[in-house]
Length: 556
Image (tube, rainbow, N blue to C red):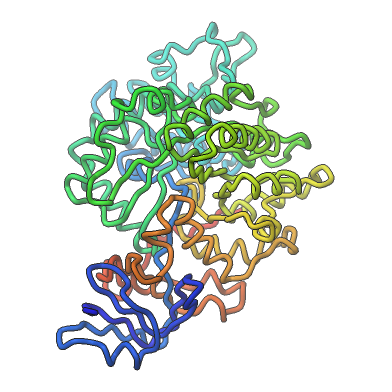
């Protein structure tokens, strides 16, 4: 056996049940060839073998973020950064928008991202007129941190034909004044046209810059130890940018993508299901990018418009939550994707939506039992024992965001849920045999996988409380959620997620063993080095610390 690189003297958690923890890993051709004791593998090294002494440090497989919006965040440098904090007022949002508008030709679409109305001094959404004051000559789409709502200025509303006569679409609504005129904020499916048109404009304008934008975003992910991810929404404009970046060799991490609707983020992916020619040459050929499935939305954001029989008190929306499909519509979409051999990822946050998604999955599997479904349920924040049982029976993977507990669980606690309904019951899911994968849903939550590990282990909230402590998981279980379970969710467990022989040699070296530090100190653990295919791609001492924004937790 040839050994090109040998990692020795480490505390290496492999996620391989046959050899769960080892001292050394042998690598050749970018893959793990053997694991074991340092002395054993040193005895098998060759003259030209590179030996990397871990000096007793902890290492594990590269982190995988299975629900991420990489292609959207790659556009971030070309958008107005309106995150709150650091911004605190609508006037500051206006300043950011104006600063970008004066650099662009009149009529150019402007996207802005990251605001949270509850973090603004005014405690409300901006209006179309306030955006007009900042950028009167450009159509503006200001996207909420959740991506489930946005605010448009008058130019954008006019360009999209949204006026007093425009009806609310199924699953969404337009905020209006007393005369019925749109005020600017749009919710859920009402944002589809704004997202689709502005993304098409950005993709056309930034096509030649795609390699540099995607490369920079990939580098930011690597600083947090993320070596692979799942992009949870890729429409045709974003697909074109991916292909340009992959062709230029600008993807130093691997992406498994889920196609969405051409008419917007929350639209059904009809083109992907009925006309495969719509997605020509979707993969990059080198494994850096591949299209693996479809994304469907059944309800709204998990902390605002999730559909629940018991209601949800966190940041109440102006309208009651609603589902995006009738059951028979959802059944048809899930079956069509499953019959084609596409993985189905279904956004379902509340218990009503989860029940609908599971019904569609059960019916599709009954009609096509010969296919390996590997259904994904995204978020699943409100669950009952019966829903957990059905999740296990249908073989679905739950892909969720543990930091949602930190941000939102205290709001849920203020309005107790109905008996039997629980908020992100991670312990119960694992006990039932349901694979749970941890993800960032970036830009909605910070990228850092170690923050999600901390949240799953402590269940600490921003209010200083511990929500449902009986649902806490161990550090090792949380690390599995960010590695081997995440690989299971993206259908890549044969390639990554563990350091078993034959898997890719994606290795993260940490500043401390997260299993031995106090739970509250998990936030202080840092990524020291990242190896992709056995090659060093990030070293903290050489390349600097990870961007502060990736570790940011907002004030409550």
